[in-house]
Image 1 (cartoon, helix red, strand yellow):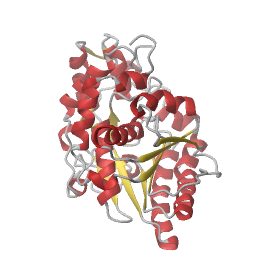
Image 2 (cartoon, rainbow, N blue to C red):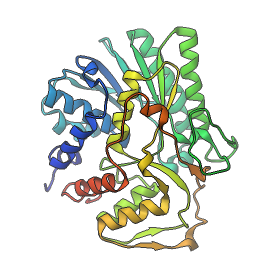
Image 3 (cartoon, rainbow, N blue to C red):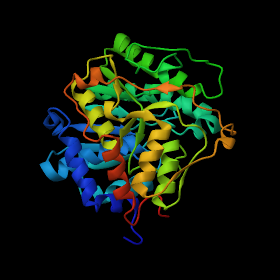
Image 4 (cartoon, rainbow, N blue to C red):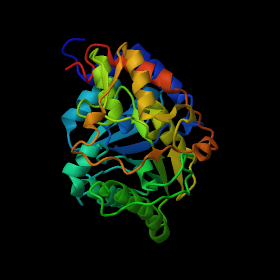
Length: 365
């Protein structure tokens, strides 16, 4: 689709619509969202855009009549991402929102659910904008709780991170009550430290003001809605493979990660929104996609028909490395809510590549 926006490309992809249908089927009692009003911050990011896509799919395919408030800094970015999906749906409403500001969101109408996903999720931004990263995770969340109080929202869902667990010996997956060591003076620690503080803030607002909230801790999320500016490992591998270039791994790649396809992550978040217990945290992890960075590099390369090259001479680069050698996550608590992942690593990577290879993808420009 020459000249089309990424959103138009996604909306026109039959394979992506099939994936939306598959993902929605993994949300128990999804019909409980019909007729609700949901505000999503960070809506154009890889995780939250997938959530919005599922909600708009429900409107178009099932007449769900969900009003989706897309909160963000750029109305143009939101329009480019969602207008083609909305297809004239008057229930998609952009609201200006800056997660680093205390002004919050001005809404005239009531709201049922708030999903707070506005946060820097790119390691480079942790270092370039550490103050803004922390403010989004704490101040931005606080303004959402204030909005929930003003609008009598049923529930706030906070998207935290697997990085809250810190560093620990061993390779077994983290359960929700496992925590390791976190050096709070490390240059990169602002992100996990503020995510930890945000989780405590969820509990605090419940204690003091009675606001119901739930927390999700995603691992490493990949999918077709990844941005071209994303320089995380899986995004860089994907960019190379889509372009037909060999994937370059600048370390041995033996760090253990919980990878999850973006639509599996979105269906998990909607499951926790509906069924999660108050003031509880839930890991988001696909047990069929726990692997090393090297493993996912190989899967992406195979899907793209290219090779993996190892250049460990660049291992000690300028960026501060991840604080976690093992960030694999146990999914038992999430699956107990009735959620099951639909995309294992090979299937998820294959679906991602099939969408991104269509003209108009984020890496084709």
